[in-house]
Length: 201
Image (cartoon, rainbow, N blue to C red; front, side, top):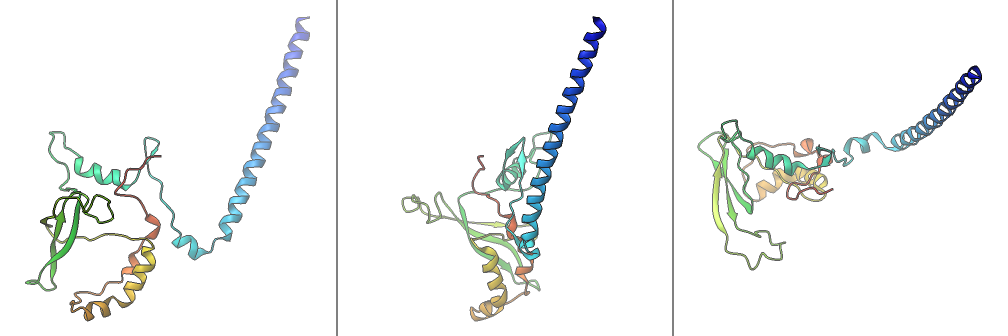
């Protein structure tokens, strides 16, 4: 009687093993079908479209989505062990740069600073802009040169257009061309990321 029970358990184990193998095979088949579908979609994309597609690089913080804003905030807030500021970076909110200042005593001229206006709701797109306090002028200087960065909707197309006639525009406005840069060659439109707002997903 004991031998029969043992034989029954082995048979049941063999049956369960076959069922698991069948399920694993089915899952593997479904996964392969999904891979084939993704491969078909990828093949339909032109090489140029893949190179310039506006892909958003995913960044995470402890399994939460975040954007470049979190990185920008973390750098100036970083502290050394003794509590001192770790990086020489300040982030000033509610400001709008109005002018880049140049040092023309050097050749070529150098851009060591900017002038700006500061107040809450400084951008006219804000509904509270008209009722805000007057602008407060200010300035900031860099140890070497300032770096300007910015963006707009359809930035890649706009910069491509500007790069073609930038010298003509500058000459027509009486602006000296210090060095002609190929702006379009440095555009990375796929790296769109929010800076002014916190990601909540």
